[in-house]
Length: 282
Image 1 (cartoon, rainbow, N blue to C red):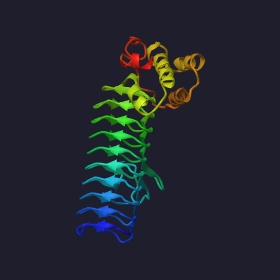
Image 2: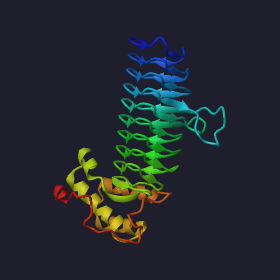
Image 3: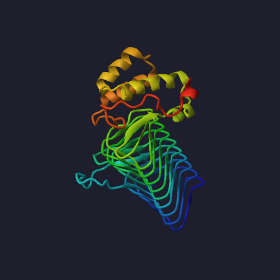
Image 4: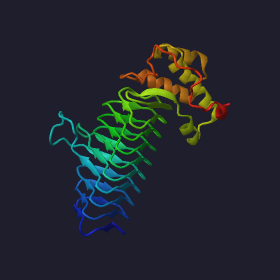
């Protein structure tokens, strides 16, 4: 525990495992089954209870609660489960992350994420790397969020919802279907609006791959076809790039169905409305 700084008012169980350079702020509580990696910062009034593992360089904001009991009526008292948070992830003030609801399972948040103030990650969720969850957003139980996705503020997801990599969920959305990777959705209920071109460009995806994804999006959402029929055309007509493969695999695996286009599946959308990125992609 070299260079560890624990405020005199903090309550840290002697059985907790603390890496070097850990800092724990005033009035925080760290339970006996907590592991903090090197350089973890726990701000004032945070509570870490139950099995909780925090990766190196992560930051836990004031008033946050990690490892609390799941809000699940099926949960059986005494079940051993926990929370894992990846390296360099930042949880801001009053974030809540509940532990998993089944034995030996984990609620997981990946590396390099930013979970903004008052957001909630419920039991059994799986949040990938580089995810941004904006203020007051709520993930209900068993949600899966792919790498580099963004969940807008005040957005809510129904249980077992899946969000693909690089997806963007607009603020205040009600998400009751799966969100395909690379897709922007918005509204209540959330509907698909465009490919997340800006996010893909920032993530370093080559222009050629972005163009093919936009072609796939048009077939999926603007052809007037059902998703299975649209996927068949995607396979036949477009290059089998890795992003397109992941898009097809995600849609095929969806059990809740994917977010529909504005107006529903039977109403084709104006093909010129694709997020205003035509010049950049040409």
